[in-house]
Each structure stands twice: as structure tokens, then as C-alpha cells.
Amino acid sequence: MASSRKITLRSSDGESFEVEEAVAVESQTIKHMIEDDCADNAIPLPNVTSKILAKVIEYCKKHVDASKAEDRVNDEDLKAWDAAFIKVDQVDQATLFDLILAANYLNIKSLLDLTCQTVADMIKGNLFPVRNEWLNFTFSIANRELVLVCLTEWVAHRRLFCS
Amino acid sequence: MESARADEVGSSSPSGSGVSSSQLTEDAAFRIDDRCPKQVSPMRGGGSRNTSPLSRAGSRNTSPSRQKVIKTKPRGLDEETAATFSKIVHPDVQMEDNIWAMLPEDLLNEILARVPPFMIFRLRSVCRRWNSILQDSSFLKFHSQVPSHGPCLLTFWKNSQTPQCSVFSLPLKTWYRIPFNFLPPWAFWLIGSSGGLVCFSGLDGLAFKTLVCNPLTQTWRTLPSMHYNQQRQLIMVVDRTDRSFKVIATSDIYGDKSLPTEVYDSKLDIWSLHQIMPAVNLCSSKMAFCDSTLYLETLSPLGLMLFRLDRGLWEHIPAKFPRSLLDGYLVAGTQKRLFLVGRIGLYSTLQSMRIWELDHGKNTWVEISRMPPKYFRALFRLSAERFECFGQDNLICFTSWNQGKGLIYDVDKKVWSWIAGCALQVCKVSP
Image (cartoon, rainbow over all chains, first blue to last red; front, top):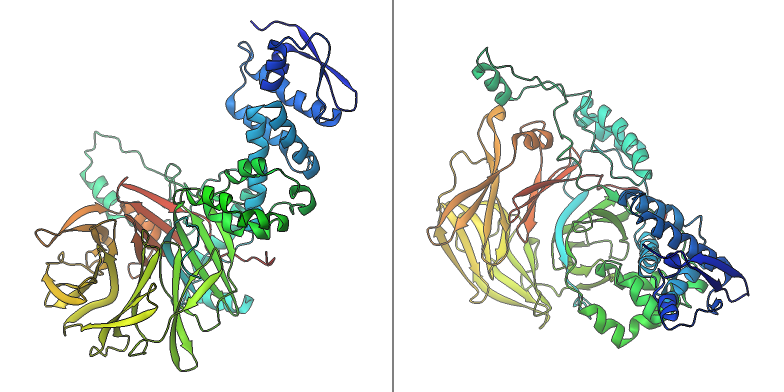
């Protein structure tokens, strides 16, 4: 059973957040600080603003609650919550950027995974955008030249040998 | 565009087209939800007449005491086999350059590790200030260790002037669109692809030309003219260990068989001359290349014509083809594996699509798989349906453009999968 000791976290702009220890130790950084007995008073987090810290705490709380025995949240539901949490119109790019830095500094692996994957997906969307407009499915191809198909496998190289 | 489409639709089966276009709107709307949609059978509404000989036979053989469940589900794709492939990458928010340029390199690597390796090369178009990182040798070294991404299906769509390229990544089960407007306009005919390189040929004025390009890096190289520079049957093969490629030119497309076989080597950037193909009656001009050997099917003498690349010589091996074989597509597999794909059965209702593998020792074709009848019917509504069959690396791909569908058979896993989603995509925004 996790202890219900409260830990105080102080953001870079001086705001204090009181959280349960179980939530605070989602961050490996904070966990080590507590273990090293630096947590008598508030734990200062000079790299994290209150706005970002609030979001991080929200994330950690949800994940701690989700793993509690009585109220075991379905994996699918948690994933859906994560998706809603990080959705790009909810979280602007500057906030997403700050969340990545915070997740890295606070060493919260699952949040780092989530944020980095979100940016990776944005990159993919930018590189190869696909519109949801389709040509008529049964556009019958009169001659082979119109739609040409082949199978290939991209092999990673340092210098691709075409140029 | 609109009028052209109406004409084309007119030339194909009218009932099929009517159903499919409405079907498409449903799918498109559904996909915006970004959930994996069920593949709704285009057969619904139209063409659901059950002409399957198997079920007819089944009902004849069923004894009266045994209740047979009548399936009312429409013929076509059922849910369990439905669209294993259907995810689409949505055009996302524009990445804000000034924000992401500030990202420390270790975190950039964290993000890029989650981007499919074959996209790394296009990153400079996402964030200009990352360009310098991409030149960094340690970064490149890290990413050159990344293993091959896996097979992708490329589709090239020539819509009047604007060529388009859509890529279906089999590992990711996602369609991507690649800008494809960097090639010279004469590059019109797709020869084939291998190792991520794609070979095109065409006529530049009267001159027959060939080029090899890499759609990801948007680089290309026009090959020098052949010694006998006519429009010839070509095949391109990549040597992945050597990082080089070769192009082999056999007879010309009009049948002039007196031309010496020529081989282009990318390391030397020259064409070399080799033996003229002996006079045989070929089944078709379709070729397959594996184990440093080019294979063609011959009618008389019956068998396979081989061109050994290392020796530059042709030889013929007798091989009996399956009886009542209607078409015969040769598809190369990994290492020495060679497959023959085609339909058996003269009568449309009794046809089946089968796959054989060559037993090199005995020079006989051994049947290894058959397309499940329901897939065959879904793919080929009419027996004379035009289809393409090609493949590599033990994957065999069937595409029926009248149906706008693709089906892939994985020889190793013995799995049939549909490629859902239309390969033909209109993208009005140029990336």
C-alpha cells in the first residue's frame, strides 16, 4: 500500500503543489530526491513552470489511479485518456515542447514516450500528408501507365546509391 | 477530370461503380475518426448474386437431416479478414520551426527513434534548423544502423501532368503520400523497383531513355544509352550489400530478338554486351530475377529461359507448366525461390488462382498455395478481369484495378491480407 504522505513540489515561478507521494514518485528524479532525504520541505523544480507542472501532475495522478487495485482502469481507456490529454489542439506545440523537456528532466518514462510519439506522429503527418479525398474507387484503368504499382523495400543507407 | 472519370466509369461495370462510390464516401468519413474501420464490402447492394459453385455443391450434398445455415452476409470480404490495412496518417498541424529548432539533440533522437527510418531523409522539409543535425556524422551513423524498414507498395499515379506517388508501408499498415514531381517528363513507364530504387523508362523525343530514382531522397540518375538503344524489356536489380544496382535489357518490345543482352552496372556506369537470347517462343515478356539469374517462361521449347548474370550467358531448362494454366506470372522470392502464379481452369465458375514454387532439383512446379475462393471472387468479379501480379521477398501482390483492391500473400507466413484504402488519392495540397 502506498503511503499517503504528501509531498510539496515548487515550480520555477514559485507556485506550490501538494501531491500524494505515490503520484510524486512517478518521477524518478523526485523519487531519488525523496530517497536522498531532500524532501523535508518543498522540492524545488527550477526547470518546470507551474503551468507545465500542473499538467504533469494531472498525468501522473491519472496513471497512479489507473493502477490502483480496486479501480483498475482498462488499458484501452487509459490510452484513450492519454490521447485526449496530449491532443494537439488541447496542447499547443509550445506546451508540448515544454512537456517533453519536463518529462525528460523529471524522468517520467511513460510521459516522455507519449510526448515524443506525438511529435513523431506530427512529423509523419507533415512529411507525407494524406488527404481524405478519394478518387472514384472504380476508376477503371485503361492502360497500364496510369496507375503503376510495384513492391519495394527501403534499405537504410548512409548515402543512398542513386545520386 | 470529372468528365474523364465518367467515361471510365461507363466502360466498367455500371452496378459495381455505383455501389463503390457511395461506399467510398462512407469509408472516408469513417476514417476521419482515426479508428481502424471495418472494410465494408463493395459487393453490398450490387453483385450479391450467389453464383459460387461451391455453395451450390454444398447444398446439394447436405443431407436433409443436417441443417445448413444460410449466410445472409454479403459475399465479399468478411470482417475477420477485413482491412488489416487501413490506417491513414492525417495531415497534421504545421510544425512550428522556431519551437522545435530549440530541442536538444538527445531529445531529438528520442523523437526520431519513433519515426520510421525511411522518413528520416525527408526531415529537412519539416524543420529547417534540423538540417544541420542531419549532416552531423554521428547522427547519420546512428541512423544508418537502423535495419531495413520493410516492404512497401508503391503506386504511381499519372493524372494528366501531375505525377503522384503513394506508398503503403506494410510494417506500419499505413498509406503515405510522397511528392513525386522531380522526375523529367519523359519518364513514363514503370520498369520496376528494388531496394527502394525505382526504374522508369520513356521516350525523350525519339530517344529511348532509362532512369533510376530514389523517391525518398528525390534523386535520380539517367542511365547512359545502351549499345542498341531501342525500347527494350528491362529489369532492375539492386545488390543491397554492395549498394549498387544493375539493369538488364533483353529483347526489344517489338520482338526484335537479334539484340545482344546488355547489362548496366551502376558502379561502372556502363552497359556491357552479352549473349543474344537464343530464339525461343516466349510466353510473355515478364521476367523475374533471383539468385543472380533472370527467368523467363518459354512456350516452345516448354520451360524456362535463364540468363546467368555472372556468366552473361543464356540457357534453357525444360520445365513442365501446370495443365490448363491461363496466365503465368513469374515472381522472384528470397534467395533461390521462384514462384509461378496464375489461374487454372478454363471455365470462369471453376477458376482458382494458384501459386507454385520451382523445385530447382527436379525442374518441376510444386503447388504451395491457392487463393481462397471468396478472395478470388472479391478480386475478380469477371473471369477476364484485368489484374497485375508481382512481388518480391516472398510476398506476392495481386491488384485488380477495376476493383481498386490489392491483396498480398505472404509465402512464409501463409497469410492473405487485403490492402484497404484506395491507392489513388487526390492530394490538392503540395507538401
